[in-house]
Length: 352
Image (cartoon, rainbow, N blue to C red; front, side, top):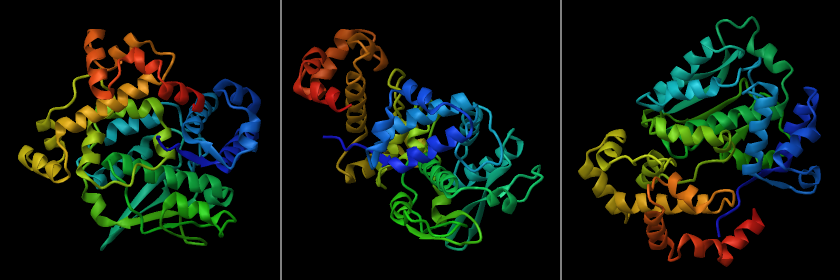
């Protein structure tokens, strides 16, 4: 059974506290996304997908895409999408971080930008003020609460992971505030050494990651933006395999033609023969990976009761539903209709 991805319920309560402080109705917000207050109060863990939906709604009502994050201002909706479009064409992670910093210089609302320093074996991404900001970083941090700083660092870390299609292993995470009571959650979130009462707020990681290629494409970006900030809340799988990078390049938009092996090899800066050889060493192939991705996408769509089987066929790129029926049976051993009558599907509905 697929592992349910969760976040600490304290994160949800912290976010709702910020919503209330901004003068918005928490009850209306929860009703809109179908979450009860008791669901939050009675649990120590909260489903990450619901947390993502909650965040999406808050972005909309607050008209601030950096709500709950360190920004020093109010960032208009659509800003993050435009930044992503600017970054995915960068050849390496290093260039992407520099471009993100440049983007924040011309971005309306925010007074804070990411700042990269590469020194020897390690690199550090911290926060600094934009050139146009009329306040210092110390002044901005003076009134900031730890939760907002933690969220900002975590989301930037996860965003960098998404850009390169794999986990960026941290050496340490630095925070300018004193050690909190929930220290264990910080260690779990960053999976590294965490230090407090530091000069700045930053993540430190091996500099070799800066040379990794940005593997995302306009196609994978579309899928990413549909569910953002879900992928920034949860960590990408701890998987450094070539297969994981190929999966990231394939993306989740199966209504379009999938990239060829030649296109994937080009994006990963290797020859097709090298791609095939290295995948074979991992006991897989590009065709197997495509089939696995299609199967998982089809099951995800089929698990959404609001979608008809014909809808799913279209989303999977099949012009004829009958062709989808044959493929689905090949993948799962059941026709789509049989799957939706199965115990597996009924149990999935009960658990959702």
